[in-house]
Amino acid sequence: MDITILIAFVAGLLSFLSPCVLPLIPSYLSFVSGVQFQELTTGTGNRRLVFFRTLFFVFGFSIVFVVLGLLFSGPALLFSGATRWINLVAGLIVILLGFNIMFDLVATLNMEKRLHMGTRPASMAGAVVVGMAFGAGWSPCIGPILASILFLAGSTGETGRAALLLAVYSLGLGAPFLAAGLAFTRVSTYLNRIKKHFGTIKTISGLFLIAIGLLIALGRFQQINGVLATAGTGLTTWSEAVPRRADLVFGGIALTLALLHPVLRVVRRRPVLRPVGTTVSVLLLLLALSQFAGWFDLGPMIGSWLLFQGI
Image 1 (cartoon, rainbow, N blue to C red):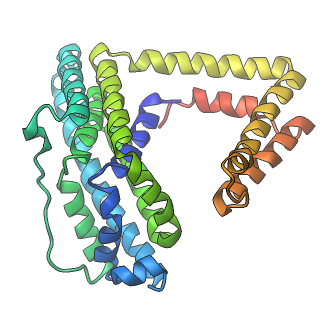
Image 2 (image 1 turned 180 degrees about the horizontal axis):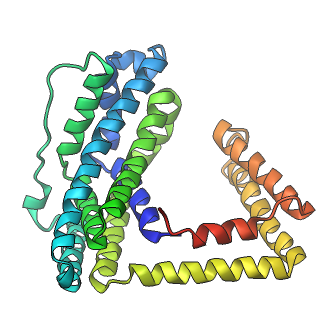
């Protein structure tokens, strides 16, 4: 598994959960789709229109982010002999951005440069333009995280890798947008619960950036990939050497995860049957039974995932 790809995806999710994006989701969706806010919140609006306009909106900011990734990878190619110093400077900047998210140390880093549009888009192409405007406007919360992924992309010195990282970052940011566009009334319930934890999200985001900065500055990403590859090989070899024991271990893990949702719901004295949680629990239960019966083997699958190094 290429750890940088996972980091880029998590960074996109953290950007979505930031205080300057999450509370504005209804406004973004209403503006992009042209559906009135009341229709959006009550679920009476045109769901297909909302989803496809949101899809093109996500496509718009993805274009901007991928282009930025290509631009940031250029200097690394021109100064490949100074890679160590480039990584050191980029890492220190990312660490500073992480501390700034947590403590607001430098006010100028929180300057917002967002392009505001006064008229709603009248077509799918218009939604793409709005998405590009969203991507071009680095808001206080998205800016540091996005900048960190750009520095990470630049440190690779490969244009293809840089484009891939920013595409995965866009996927992490865009997937919740698409989920909200597809079923806003249901998703909004979960989003409202998250709002109470903005302080924790800021702390996690800051620590996340500090960790990325340290890895960039020390040039340790390749070593982490090597450790994961070794773990993948070892896991595959072990599961093939003792298949019955592997079935019991992985089946037990899947069964534990399957029981986690209903047990927590019972402890909290809440209804056990919930659409998402129940579906996940049932799938995990089926996976556990398949593993116990020897019909399915998680070991080689997880090992192959850990060995995957991206495109």
